[in-house]
Amino acid sequence: QVQLVESGGGLVQAGGSLRLSCAASGSTASINAMGWDRQAPGKQRESVAQISTDAIGNFADYADSVKGRFTISRDYANNILYLQMNSLKPEDTAVYFCRAQRLGVKFWGQGTQVTVSS
Image (tube, rainbow, N blue to C red; front, side, top):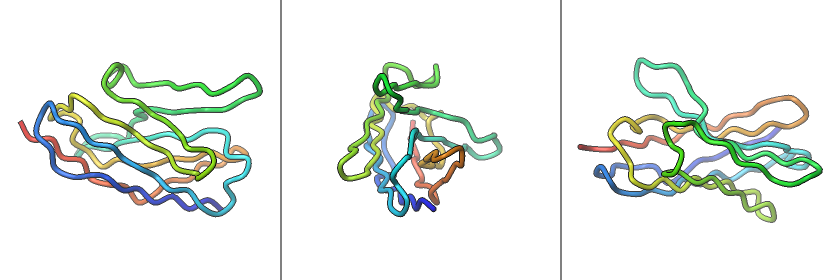
């Protein structure tokens, strides 16, 4: 099992920035991918960013809606995942969930609310 705890959400004005953190614990060895999903009220959960690791290296991937504004990073030594969010827009308002994939199984945290006011 992998336990994930998010932090860093809050209320920010449009154009502002927030940094989300996700602390992973438990069976963190062999986690081959971590990412951030979000779910806005009345909408389906969507993937925002993901960072994956294979024999070649680490790869980051982003949803088109956040490219150039969000940056995902991972502290492998301390098992912490980050999402730096800049130039936030009201449409970024959602609950953000940390996600980890280990041996084909996905785990999610409880989520942290991000609210962007116009």
